[in-house]
Length: 138
Image 1 (cartoon, rainbow, N blue to C red):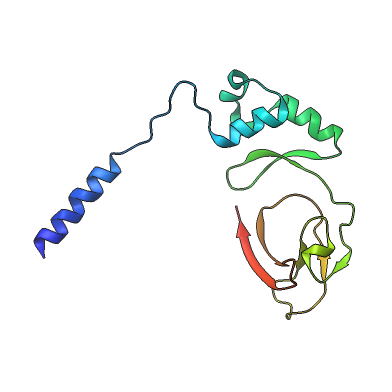
Image 2 (spheres, helix red, strand yellow):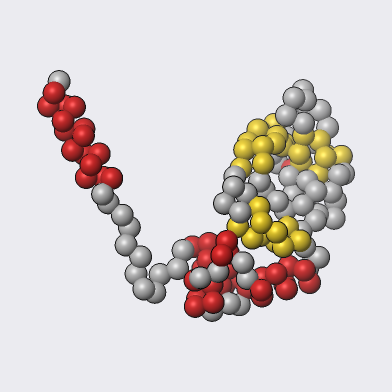
């Protein structure tokens, strides 16, 4: 029994000391997407706090969105409204976004089309097949 416990401790110590090395030219995926989608250079994005990008903000506002910090990480994201927000629905296929429904509602109760592109929070929605799904995103 002591051998197993000692082996586990050694294994955890070895794993705990492992880290992924970042190469000089590497950029985290979320920042690489920011660069690709918003036209910023790698150098401009590398040191941006919380993924803020002036080019991203300008494009977001031009598209009618709100450039704000969302989620637990507080990263900047463009939140745009859906044209069919609040429309009564029975499946996400009925909406531009998701068909959101009250978490406590009975299966089959009508939902409303999602207000905007913000994916964060705890909520229930009907998938494309009309099945109720509960989820927390952050």
